[in-house]
Length: 233
Image 1 (spheres, rainbow, N blue to C red):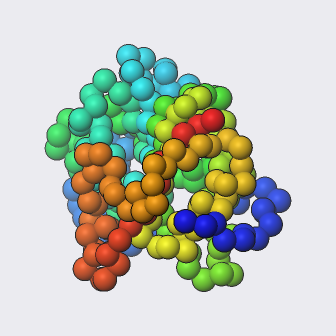
Image 2 (cartoon, helix red, strand yellow):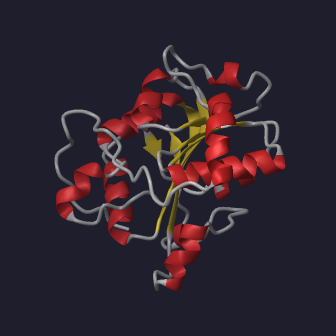
């Protein structure tokens, strides 16, 4: 893929724009918001050391915008010795993940139900092994591109918190957003893109299981996705 020209970088990180509420939470989800969520929520009143959140973890993973939490819960389930941090503002998605955590007794997930910029600001350098941004809001209208999560200043924060050779996965079914992301990545020296051959970016990650969003996209006719994998330089 050939990255397209992109607008000049904003002056500083913008607040993450995302939908915060949808349908009213049902009774069970509301109860979990009041009982379970406070126990899992990361306190950012002081710098956050993920190793203190998960003292015995082999690796630390951070997923930004986990939606209904299918990927996050599966990864935590499959990697019980790793620690997982999930950041999401949409109450419906938080509620679904809380139900899964509660039903399955998952113990290696911590949550941050607010703007990811606030969380990134308190994470130490080189404190995260793997970072995931999967199917973020594409904000398709040009005048809204400034609201996209992928911006130079955010990538700089990703690079700061990732360990050397740390993994950054980005997936989208919107070609314009794929080009946007590659254009930004190609203009920083913080990430390597070890792509083997043209078109390989359409192959899902090893062990990938389609989320409900991806399944919906296929039903709506968006038949291919872009699965990018970058490494911290």
